[in-house]
Amino acid sequence: MRLSELSGKEIVDVKRAERLGILGQTDLEINENTGQIETLIIPALKWFGFRKQGGEVRVQWKHIKKIGSDMIIIDIPDNE
Image (cartoon, rainbow, N blue to C red; front, side, top):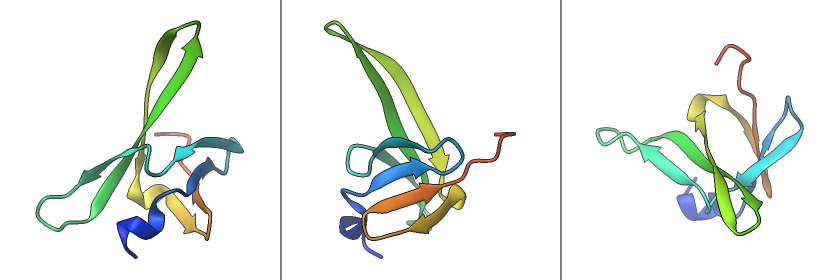
């Protein structure tokens, strides 16, 4: 699958039943040796007035359970 095919898909956490973001608004951590995506880095921004607050959610590629036509389902174990 090409990166362009992933762009625009919603990222959903199956345990929390919440939308984390959209791929394309995220950063990717790529292994320089293999060229494989290792981690999705999703900004967790919230607007309070005019200031942005938040950090990021890091999702390892191994936690992606399903890539559908418009959604990416992730399942992060509780111990991580």
